[in-house]
Amino acid sequence: MTIIETAKRILKEGPICDACMGRQFGKLSTGLTNAQRGNAIKLTLSMEAAANGDMELQKELAPTLPQARKLAGGEEEECWLCRGLFQHPEKLKEYADKCVEVVKGYEYDTLLVGTKVPPIMSEKEEVLWAECGIANAEPLKSELNREVGKLVSQMTGKQVDFKRPDVLFTIYLADEKVKLQVQSLFIYGRYNKYVRDIPQTRWPCRECGGKGCERCKNTGKMYTNSVEELISHKVIEAFKAHDGVLHGAGREDIDAIMVGEGRPFVMEVMDPHVRRTDLAALKEQINTYAEPKVKVSDLVYVAKNAVEEVKSLKVNKVYRLKVIYNEDISIETLKSSLATLSNSEILQRTPERVAHRRADLDRTRHVYSIDLEELNAEKKYFVITVRCEGGLYVKELVSGDNGRTRPSLSALLGTPVKVQELDVTKVEGGISWQDHMARD
Image (tube, rainbow, N blue to C red; front, side, top):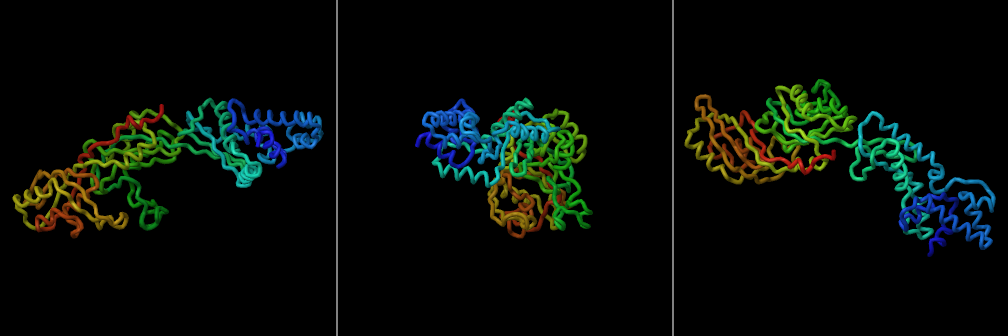
């Protein structure tokens, strides 16, 4: 079937504007707008009708083609496919105006427009394609996205970005509204935690699920503060953001501290009104606010994919453990037991203390070395340094967790021992943040 034959079949479905006619052949040529393409096709049809004396074809063209109306009479009619959306440029301008209005107050460099088309409009397009054998059409929403995107870009001086725009406008044709989605910002860095009994991230109250109750004193949280909140407080202020979410390379226990070079993390800045600030100054603001509990360092802007890499990091860790006991332990037995655990594979079933929120699995992790730093027989404690593979439950390496960790220090010593204090002194490695640098 030729283009002209297909166009004649399209006209039988009802009045159709230049843009909607041209869009049905949108993949067949370049360098023309759909309106130009459609107008050229309809003018060709009108000339053919005039040459053949085909007044019926002129009447079909007349509702949306002025040249045909002069010959066949009649009034301009609304396009049945787009409901007049592309017939009147001011309608597209109205949507562009709504986009510009909804983004007021936000900093951004790039944008993208999307559209939610009512099911009835999509169905009409699909029926038209099927009835007329159309195989090279561009969907209505694609043209709307492009044309409104051009207008918004011209009005704001910002560039369209199809991969990861700073702001995304979604046009809802059914209720003629525009909604704004602001892409998150991402900041990579390291944090130290110098106090015990605060979690890495916000921990909703178990009783109320975060709604607020008597148990949590209506805070909705199990703990008053967290590393995430101590860092995000100043981040939210600096970027005028809705929230800040911390993605860490693993996490230390609530009762552990994180010293040394710190733990790698990415802070996701949600719904930022400001997209660029001086990170050196922000670091100082965070550290002043969070002192003496938390400190951050090495802050840099990164792209979104840094989150996945940080969360999937397989890093080795170094712990300093203060271990307490009741029964007397000879230094020879202790040294022998530590030597047995050094450079060994440890089989661990998910510990009882986290079984309520972790899958009940068996895991194998490696202990690279254990060094004895101090033994105080009078106060019945000793201090050891453990370097091990990430993911090892180091408290259970000591206690044995009722046989769920094998071998364990308690089993080798022949007497129960447990960790009283735990310090993470080093998280080895991190991401190559230069590979994840955000666009300037």
